[in-house]
Image 1: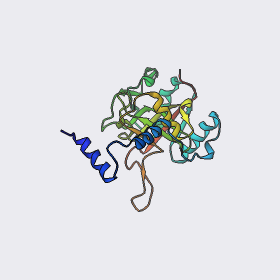
Image 2: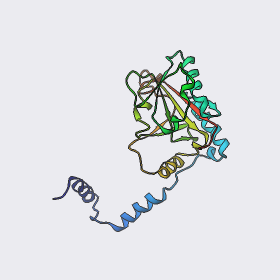
Image 3: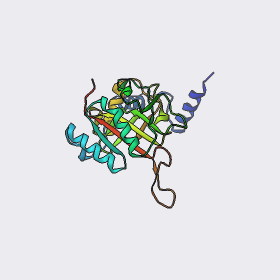
Image 4: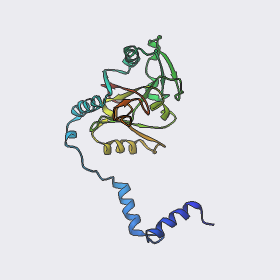
Length: 225
């Protein structure tokens, strides 16, 4: 008996007038998957590592994200508290259960209520890591997994993202290269550029329409240890 998947793919092949096994087409697909060709690359990304970090910060802030530069992970708890106090928010955060955030000394700030795990409807602020920062547009590349539940990116009103400077890459193609090098593909990849927004209502920009109304990036001036 033919399985449903084979039936569907067979119907597509017949509609395209292709044989069940087209060796030339298979080789074309295999070559495409193996070589990952680049598209048109913006000239503004033709800068060194320091220039890419500055470009990322400029592009991210241009779309209403905020960025704070930190010199070490030990500064993260105080930076989170400053952000919350600056917006008159409750000193509490739901933190992704990611290994990169396990080393953060959260206990040094006892006034900050830190819980770990997936987001709930009551969480106002989340803290997550990112896989990469895309300098060409100031975009964050985030992936799903046991350590990085996707709901943390969208449910809370305030999203704080921890990003190392060596995670800043020039282009989207470089981001995909970084993901492939990390191993198995995740179930979900999210590209986030600034806070959630819409102009559907009277053509007026509204932040927080479909996700966080604030996006705050803690950019660590450190390399992967």
